[in-house]
Length: 138
Image (tube, rainbow, N blue to C red):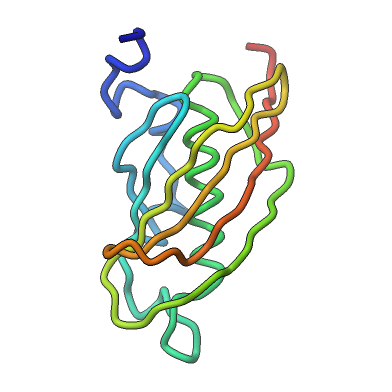
């Protein structure tokens, strides 16, 4: 096992920075590593669109947060450069949704993360690719 696989989720300082937007949207980190991270969002009435289904903005937010947390697990600063999202399905009457971010490629400045969002029972809601741009000198 490499040293990164031995770290606990809370050991990834930049991935665990206080994020008021995540808190506002009920998003929490389940696990973090430099290659794969999982987040969950607790669904409230504010998470829904006028039709009672999950709002697409929440799904996107969850995906963007998963990509950013996965990218920052190298303890470098990243911002979103580009995102491509396919909304595949939706759901009503659920309590939580999960996003999984998996690194496709890490370059010098650009990290590409594949992200999916699923319901608690595994139904695929969204699939996408998010490009994270490394900022700073580290």
